Length: 414
Image (cartoon, rainbow, N blue to C red; front, side):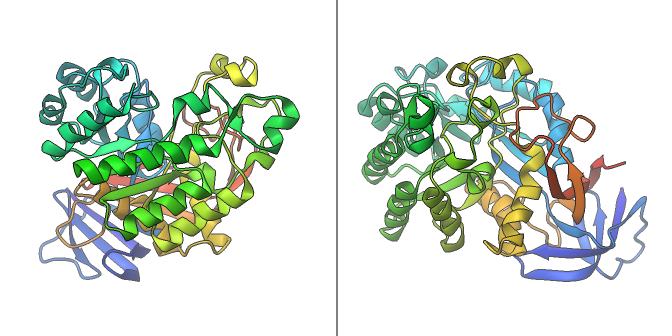
C-alpha cells in the first residue's frame, strides 16, 4: 500500500521537523518527505492543507472493559498506541488473560500492563517473567494497594531482575481512606470524605527510597500535587531512574472547578488546589513530568448516579485529550511541538515502544488534526460508551481528522 499526505504542517520535536509539505508512506513505513520516491504509487492521498501532521499519540494509562470498542474511540482521538492498566476485568495477572485480551482486542494499538501481585490483592507476587514473555510491557498494581513495604520491595527487586518497568500511582491508602475529594476548602464546605496531599507524597517518598535500594525502573502515574513534583524533581537531580506522567484533566481543573455533587468530577487522585495545578504545568516545562496521559476510564451511566462518594471515580477522556492539550498551547503553558512530544515521543520512550516520531523508515503511525476546528462535546460528537466527562456540552477547539497506523488509515472523520 502506498499513502501520500499532502500539504500538511509536519511537526516532530524529536527530529526537529516543522515544515509544510508531503509525506510518502509505503509498506507501513515513512519512505520520503516532499519528493516522491522512484516508482512510488499512491493508493490513497490525504489533503492535509491547514492541518497538523504529527506522530500518533501514545497513551500511558487507559482502563477499558471493552478494548475492541474503545480502540475505535482511541483511533478517533489520534491515539495509535495505548497501555491498558491491569485493574480491569479480568485482572491481567496471568499469561492466559494476556492472550485472551490480545485476541479479543483485535487492535495493534493495545499494549498491556501486567499485575504486580496475584489478583492485585497485594500479598503474593505475580509471575512477572511469564507476563513479560506473554507480551506485557510493564507491571503495576493499578489503583490497588500493596499490603506492606516488604512486599513492595520484593516486587521491585523481581521487576528489576527482569528489566521490567514498574508503573506506580503513589497513594497511601490508609491516609486516602476511601476519600473522593481533595482535603481542602471544597471538601470541607460540602462534607465530602477527603484525600490529603500527603497520601500521594508519602507513598512517592517511600517508593523513591526503594528505587534507590533495588535499582528498579519506576514510572509514577497520574501525579496531582505540588509536593510530589518537588520530590520527583529532587530524585531526578540525584540520578534516580524514574519518570512520571500527569492526566490531561489535572492540568485544567482544580477543586474550585468541581460542581458540588456532580460525580463527573469524581476522580482519583482528586482535583487539587490551583497551586498544585500550576506546579504540574511547571513540571511539564522543566522536564520533571515526562508525559501526559488521558487516564481514560469510561463508565456507564448507572456508575455515576449514586451520591458523589459512592460513584466510580474516573473520567472518559480520550476524546478531550487533543483539545485540552491545544488549550495549554493557547494559554502559553507549552508550545505546540513540546506539547505533542508529551503525547507521543516521550511516552513511547518510557515504555520502550518503537513509536512516537516521524522519520524516514520509522513506522507510519500518524495523527492528522485540524487545530482550529471547534466542536461541542455532546451525544452526536461523542464516541465512547462512557459519557462521564466534566466537559459535556462545552465547546472545545481542535479535532483529529485522520489516524494512520502502520500505514493504514484506521480513522477518517466524515
